[in-house]
Image (tube, rainbow, N blue to C red; front, side, top):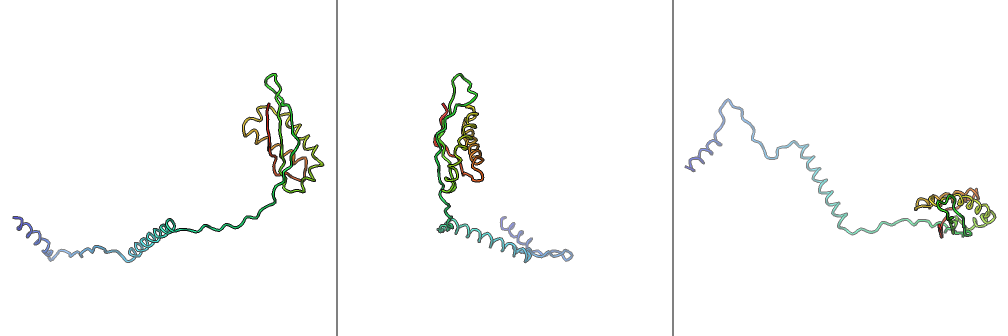
Length: 176
């Protein structure tokens, strides 16, 4: 019975269509227009090229890129100022609080020392008048110290204008 069934299936496949029926062309497995072949080929080339490039990048040793030498600027010059001791205003308790600072000025070059020395009393006066108005809460945290540093830099630059210092640096800060 199995042989009979197989024979009928073969006969059906071999039968030709009736005379009035249209013959359909046999479909080829890879029947695509030529443009599609080009697109598929191009995509394959890109995929393989990208994979090869990635493999080269990740697996091959690379030499370190050469960095252009950065021109070295003039070294900064530092000037120590006299120690500053002031009492803070607005003490909340009965005890007076004091602020003790050791400050260093960062100057752009050695010639600035000669320009600053004659006006040092003006710089110290600007520092003293500002620091006496501070409250203990003004110095809380790193933000408070940053504001203090910026304000002192602004005041020293105003005192020695048209010259300018690079920064005001703290060597010691004590609030007691």
